[in-house]
Length: 412
Image (tube, rainbow, N blue to C red; front, side, top):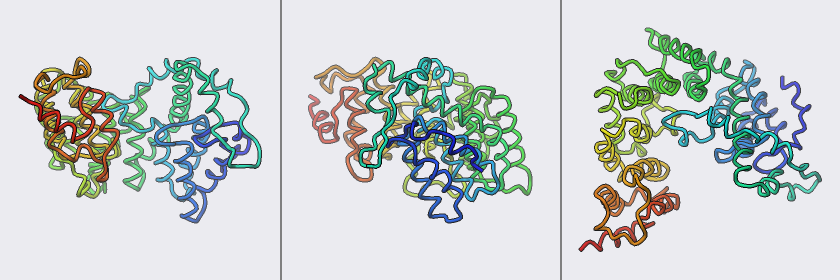
């Protein structure tokens, strides 16, 4: 196994922390019989070839070997390998939901990126690891912003296409004995809209099998398959909106809205609005067997993102739903709700500097009032969340709860 691993000049490739000559050892360690060794190697790969959602030149080269490991029954922990591959496809998925991955746009944006990457200087060599640096860093910084955009689009697209080669493997995993593997396989397939028909037929067959009497399936895996079908262009059957399992009603609503858009039926709209307004479930977490990978399991946040697909006739109710949920969320979930709410409240851009609160339009003022009286949206793990402060400030509003309350206190 892993034939050809040493034929690649890994030192010539870059990842988040420098020359990628450590990657072969990490890939081999995934075959270790010792779970601690495997876990350490997996953590290192999440850090260097997938760093905070970013992919690097070495990422695309590592993928074929990860696919080989995934397809081999002798691999000790295929679920862990699949999890890394599912992360490498698009990075953090919040940037691509609820629409799905815009692969045609990426292919256009990546034109010329291959040549730019090939022109980078040789990597660092030596024995002093403290001097090991990311091999592209200085070179990338020398490029114009447009050139950097093309280069990184190419790097991300190369990794995406490398994972795409594993689609046949992911299809077979839809019938894997482990429901967790089936779930992540369906999630991974959702990001490949090109040649969607084969993927949709495989998902439809897997859904039918999961619903057969005697088959042990989880609501979470079924929900993931329904959402994946929607992202690939097939609206889940309306019957799922009447299912007694809440997560399947959620999946049907977001999947149907993804395909039907402004033409969505009233039952779909109502289900989506109910999820978008629901309080955060952070405290208890999802019921066992109901977790879905999309947006790291934030079903209410995903529903909030999907509201923008409903069309202007539902804008008022969508905004009301977001304001109902906002006081109950914090951290990344707060960012998701706020992002949608701010776009609805400020359709024409940020408020002008110095705008008095009394001059704000009704939606903007309502949003400011919710932020002024609610502590949770400003926090992450009980501490002030700088990302929320920056996001709110981009729209011309005060950047902290305290200054927001003072701002609101200036009403005549």
